[in-house]
Amino acid sequence: MTYEEASAKQRTERFGMSHLSIEVGHLYAEDLARPDALREEMAAAAAWVEGTTAALAARLGGRKPRVSTCYLVDDYFHDNLPAPEKLIAVLSDAAKDAGLRIDYLARESACATMDSLDLAALVAGRIVFEPPAGTTGSRPPVSDSGWLSNGVPSPKPRGIAMGAPLLWRPPDQNARREHSVFLDVELWNEGKNGRRWSCPMLAAVWQLIRLGVLRNQGRRIGVPELEDQLVPAEHSHDPAHPGGERFPGEWSSMPSILQLEPKAFPFPAYRTVSVLSGSFLEVEHAVRVICGSVRPDPGAIESIRRSAEIEGVALPEELVDRMTYIFQGPF
Image (cartoon, rainbow, N blue to C red; front, side, top):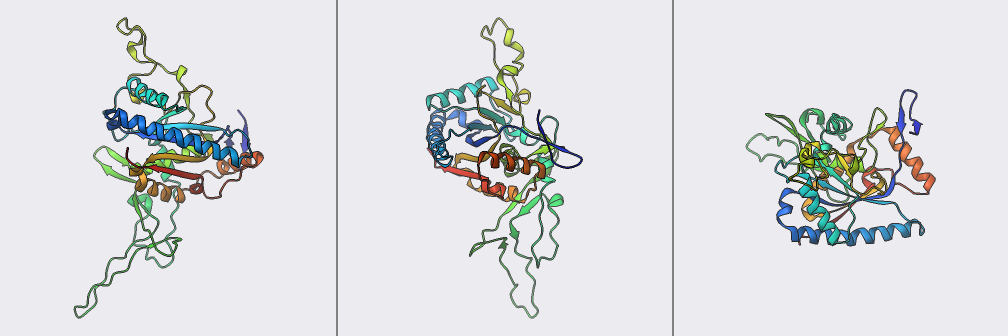
């Protein structure tokens, strides 16, 4: 393994990067009940993958771009998913029919906890929010409230003597253009079973993993496992199942990120594109607010910047500017 010095005390792991990571969908349990819609989604995603790859090749001066594709399975908010063997078969068949290659399959629950690492908490601990000038400081910090905003909310109205109406002031977005689009994002809530991370928070972790900027004491987070390294389901040698099974029987036993294509380009990439249903628009707005407030490991940022520079690839300074979306309508 090759390392690069990040500080006097810590070394930052370096690894190969793709030019682009394309997320070709986000699977919910109910999607399996609509196989036709799933196939149509895959067909549309395949067209976007082809077009995006061609555009990237043009920007690279004709060089063949390194593009990897991925799919995220929601096993965090849904515990009634079919077994991995069945779900991956349905997904793979739909992709094959569309002429689409899926290189990596990831579990959304791994964005909360990955290999015993409280990953969402690690990212939450890197959120930096500085209240704009003029705020009173009455709002508790993100670490206490679990809420992150992109500006200043409306202050609590104050009454005026002699029965005059209460005064109201509108919220104000940071770095707004002409008009404000204020957003308050819930990162987590506390329940009887402990902390429950929100969809935007987990999706923000997912984006940061794909961009390769997360480290744990300098070490890479989110290394995919090859399919042939898996321990299959317990009955894989059962005579009743002569063909055996390729995957474990439970999602909790599946890798955080499974590499389905042995010759796939690297999972992390300089930039990401997410091809999603339009219903994810609000969630991804929140994701950008979160990612824009996270301060990743400086050694990781510098390592990626140098690698891109060697390749002649220009990267935006802001992480959120490395994230692009394609929202599709209902099928």
